[in-house]
Length: 286
Image 1 (cartoon, rainbow, N blue to C red):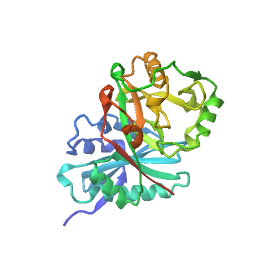
Image 2: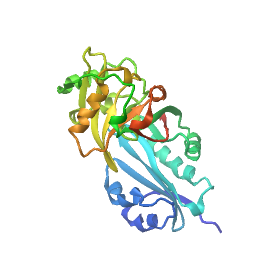
Image 3: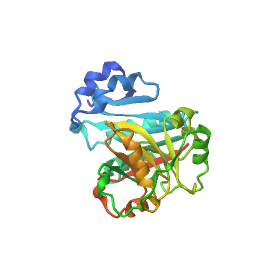
Image 4: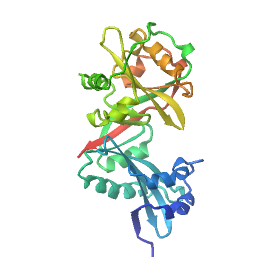
């Protein structure tokens, strides 16, 4: 008789079961940082079990003062795929999140071409959102077609930083790229004092544009750039400002920039960048 499937929250005692999964992922960071994920107040991991075997693992992380839940870390054992295990795992996880009063948005970010993951999200009733292009400027000497200019003026006052974000009347990105790989709806929950203090803000000469740059680590260290318009190449000094920040943070391997579809199309030459496959954000408000 086939054993009943069970979804439950993982504990430290599940480490060996996680290790026994055949996911095909070499040096899986979920395995490496499993203990930290389990002990964290903002991360949760769940497993889909059939008897002693874990067929799939996944969970969520909380952001924006614990009001935004991002699904992720989904892996399936290759020996048990094509059976809807990912959906069976995430359905009760999403139901659990919907019951949490403080959480107001549930979403996930995946590669545009990851059709299996996208089908799972659609089955969960999570709505399709904007496409983002993640590029790392790591060969600035190859930049072309941009408008040279002086480095923009740095903003030091935290109230001024928050006011700049609040002043946005439009946002070409359609999201707030809180961290590398973690875009969210644009919401003031993310504009905490700690976050703003850790972020450098710069404004151009006529005060019509600003850019924020925050050091972030996703395996490597980056200068993570947030710019909410599509005219990167038309703004004098924009790229000089990015490079100036990078020079002050030499441990970073480059400047990670989130581009919208149109912003990406506006790039005249990609030689200066490390280019990823596009990503798509899914999300639904409760």
